[in-house]
Length: 438
Image (cartoon, rainbow, N blue to C red; front, side):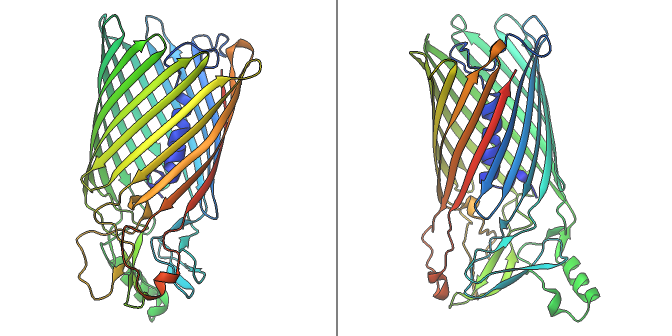
């Protein structure tokens, strides 16, 4: 199961990593990760453990360790290791029904049953991922700086390899920095059971006279055992020091993905005029996607506290547009302790081919997916981090947050029994992170 396609899960894990690795860019506050007594001379380390748990769905545990080595002359080596494990149940995309439903597992071996009125969830959602990132940064000339890096991520059925680079130029006595970065990744997808052909029906062993006949039909519904995708991205950024207490950043990015972009585990229910499911078909998405985004961030030093406000607007050629507003405010409390409340709001429109179900008798579209992660939704995160600066400048913190995702009906009329069933249920989760910098 590709972890980067698990919606709220991947967002939480990525946010945890970014929160851990980000340093305060306004001033050298004593609560940042800069240590005066490092474990190894010339190196700074960040570590964290994260728990993410959805109600009745996916649970995730993640460990992060990052290191930054100072090799003198303003040259640095950055290393990052991430280990995470996911278990639980994931939505299949099929609609709830007034009676119990039985589904074939993605591997084709075995089946599972969903209770009447319940959202169909595949309880075989399990995976472990290891991710390694490394980068080297150094001055190129007096006002130019360069960074080059690599990325490796491996899951049970997914491999991602990537390279990246960045060049920045300082102006205005280093109060203005302009940068351009690029990255390229190649991913290999090898799902258990293979990759199904577009809109082929889910097969059931009970409908075949023998195991051999079922296996032959199941193999015939797979178009290949594995596939690939590539992603190329460009990022342009400007960072400006407004005054000694205010830093502003503006980024524009464009990314192009090509290859297999569907989810081999997601299906669409075909329902009749009464809303009763007749069969379930495997989804099909376009084989390319171009995403663009604008990101605006402001950081202020306010009488010993630090306020961080950001906004991101994303749009793509799937007609999926999103807005993200994020606010963090760190301020000191008793002694060396500090608290950092956090609030985030996210909203998106649905992709142009998103459909909560297909109607019996209607021609099949070129593309369709009922995955709520590309549907219309709102989501918010609220919480806080509490930390303290220990001896030697080491930093210890605990972060607790609540996340809720609210999928919405994009205006589709629900036939028959579907009017009385929950098709757009909320996803609720709790995140707990413990971090230590030394």
